[in-house]
Image 1: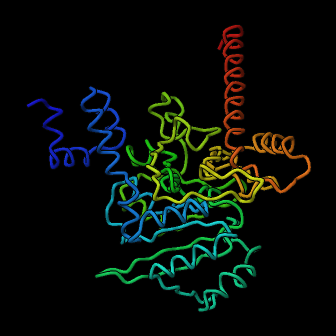
Image 2 (image 1 turned 45 degrees about the vertical axis):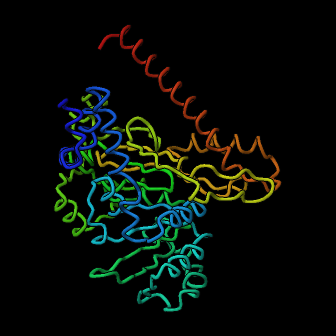
Image 3 (image 1 turned 180 degrees about the vertical axis):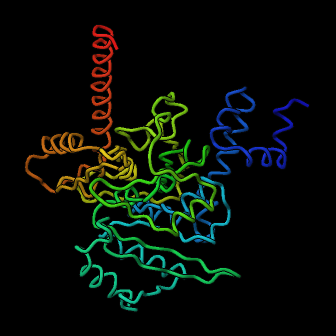
Amino acid sequence: MPLASALRLGPIQDGICDSLTPLELIRLGKTCRSLQGLVNDYIRSAFHPHRLLSTFFRDVPAFRSIQAQTASLISGPAALNFFDRNDSHADWPLDIIVYFHHRTLVAHWLIACGYTFVASMAQSPDLDFTITEGALARKEVSYEEMAVCDVLLFHKACANKSLVINLVITTRSPAEVILHAHSTCLLNIISYERAYCMYPRATLHDRRSLLVRASGKEWRGRADELEEMIDRGYDVVDTLFHEDFNLPDEHRCFTLGWRWIDDPFAWVIDFEVGLDIALPPPANSLSSARTHDPVAICGFALRCGPDEEPYMEFVVIKGPAVEYSYVLGDQDSADRLITELYFKSPVWDGRYWDEESREICKKLISDCSAQRALRALEGLRRRCVVGP
């Protein structure tokens, strides 16, 4: 029996593929067409959103529809478990990050799914009061300056386990909250249409995690969080070594500089979006309907300060011409997008340009990449002339 045919036997296929990292799976798929098909089939099955979401929701398409309509994102330990293919999802809370103006819809949807709101000491047990008056009172008092104005805890008893959901309400962008994570192994995002792993080689293959802080902020991690990462098998580092810079791109765990959410250094899994997923309608009669989640527009930069301490740099933009907030890697990128939006709508007439902003950013990325390539080429020419 040919090797590829033997591997397609369910127990053999799952046993071998489950033991491989995503990088090893990709390498296996490059050996021949038959194995490429096997790997593709395995990835579609092993990294299907239903494997994570079915633990928390009976109607997975309904939740993904809510995700699509509210631009909510999943991150935290649950997203890491998804990429790790760890099926013990009920042992970890599901972190859902939601825009401030969609908080009521998502919170009541969770109640309709059988979840119970569990108030903290600082919250009213009345959910409606907490998600309106309470959240409004705390809107300007963000947790750790993360643009988080409140976190609502929901429990649901199910068989022999208790399911936990943290509804994180942000005043700006869910992507900003995720980029404030204390370590790179938590920089994973699940939207209704895609799953993103920002540092796949480090997180899923080499099991390394870099401690980072947001620009101008103190590191936010705690001792118990460090212990948790170590227990998961991660080699936790707080600085970049010289060998990290000297490795070829394909072997490098951490790349300094400007990044985009679906650039070649990230691992992106496209989910099937069928007719059972209700996409959002246009915000108004003047605007185009969104066909992608706003997180598709997301840039950031990993930098090292004078003390060689790594930090994340990004800029959040919000304006009348867009319904949602966006995260970009530097002020120059943000200014370019704002300028493009201004030219489209010098006097705001009520139209939102969120759908069109994605194409604007694609051109922006292409232009920036070309400029960086020219600068690198010019630097190479100078070195050739001047010498080392």
